[in-house]
Amino acid sequence: MHRILVFIFLVLSVSGFSQDHSHVMGRKLNFPDIPGYKTLKCDFHQHTVFSDGSVWPDIRVQEALLDGLDAISLTEHLEYQPHKDDIPHPDRNRSYDIAINEAGAHDLIIVKGSEITRKMPPGHNNAIFLSDPNKLLVDDSIQVFREAKKQGAFTFWNHPNWTPQRKDGMATLTDVHRLLIREKLLDGIEVANDQTFSIEALQIALDNNLTIMGNSDIHKLIDWDFKVDKGGHRPITLVFAKERTAESIKDGMMNRRTVAVYKDLLIGRDEFLIPLIESSLKVTAAKYIGKYNVLGVEIENLSSTDITLQNQTGYTLHNNNDMILLKAGEKTTIEVKTIERKPDVSLKFLVLSAVNAPNKHPSITIKTAVEETKQ
Ligand SMILES: [Zn+2]
Ligand SMILES: [Zn+2]
Image (spheres, rainbow, N blue to C red):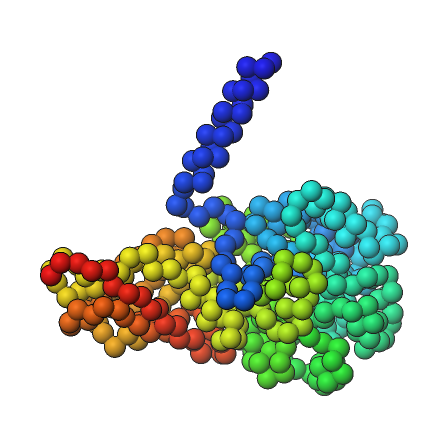
């Protein structure tokens, strides 16, 4: 018995060792902190059997742990309860209670939330950081937001591009949404939901100072819907928070400090998008190649998303046209023809895989000293 235990211990520690030294990114999502804030990975729109989802809440917790998320919310439809004959659901806190119990010893923040499920307008909206979702079972579709706000909730407009409610897929603000925004009853909007991205929703966020969000809206399994085995991942909201607490996440969201991640697209305001991308790209070497005046700049992409840059350095490149793909978790060398040898460089790129407005891309600058090499 003792020998078997020792053997198992050895196997586990050896496999742990090889994992630590692997340079291939695992499924856990990575996004580095930015100056002044922690970068927290969140998915605030998910379903379980307690509304129209297909799994028990513990599975959502396990999926989030596999993806390395910091916070989730299970946002069951308050008004749409197709499983209620099999699973009576008089207490709308139940999904949260099971999830928080499962999260127990794990380091995952669970935020209490609900999906307010109405016809358009106002369509579907989530309220998170609630204290008691039962109190949101009211008929009036404006009053329900007032009740959520009374509980200190953060509210956001879900999938404004959802074709069953918006046939042409064009997210469009209605008078009801204008009223909600004016009365400070609506804080955010999903620009990415499940398998869709809405550039119109991004414009609505910018025009109305709403928090930019991306969420999975998962009903079945994350692995199946987002093809995790093929390197896919769910949409998430990165929240820039002072601390890794629910309170601090709420503060970040109330103050619009987010970037949404959808496939390999980063969506946000320059104020957070630029530091996120600059923190994700680390220069690991910068030296002239042999005796020539071609500078090799090796850049490691520390994030879980591929980053595509367009050259705006003012120099031409030796090993690329103007487009550079920096693969997630990998090191890539860019060869820059600086004409003469420089002691340091400041290289400007347009980030084609990020948007700060419809079809507008942020610019980043990579500054580095050049290692001395013999000419
Ligand atoms: Zn919905
Ligand atoms: Zn939903």
